Image (tube, rainbow, N blue to C red):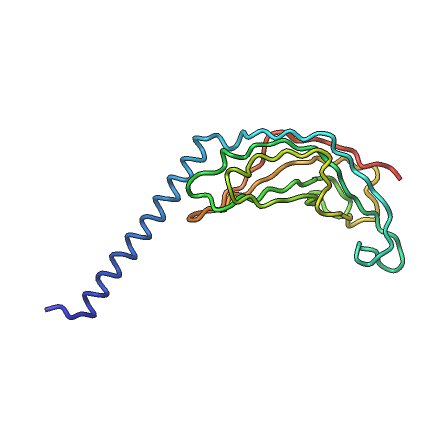
Length: 181
C-alpha cells in the first residue's frame, strides 16, 4: 500500500514537526526561567571611571584635512556577577560597557562602546576589575568632548542555543563629565 518513499517522507515529517515543537518549548521555558530569575535587576557596581582625552592628528583616529580630532579613553573599576543570566539554554553572553552622551550632530545623542567581553561559561560570569583600561579608544563625530556628561551603562545580550536573543542592562549606571583640555 505505501512504498518506501512515502514511509520515509512520513517519518521525516514527524521528526521535523517534533523538533520544531521542541525548539518552541525550549524557547518558552528559557523565557520563563529568565523572568523568574529576575535578570532585569542584576546589580553592577561601577566606580572610579576616569576619562582622559587627547588630540590626535592621525587619520586612523578620525582626523581629516590635517585638523586634530579629540580621542577619549577610560579607566574603570567594575564588580558584577552575571551568573543569573546563565541557564541550560545559554550559549554565550555578550557584555559591553557603553557611554551615552548628547552631541550636536545626532538628535538622540551618541552611544559608544569602551569595553566588551564574551562570556561562554557560568564560572567566568563573576567579573571584578580594578583600574581596567577600556578596550577601545573613542572619538566623537564632532571635534571635541568638552562640556559633555556621559552616562556609563553595562549592557548584556544572551545568545541562546535555541530561541530569541535577550537584551538588557544591569542596574547601576554612573555619570561622568568629560575633562576639559
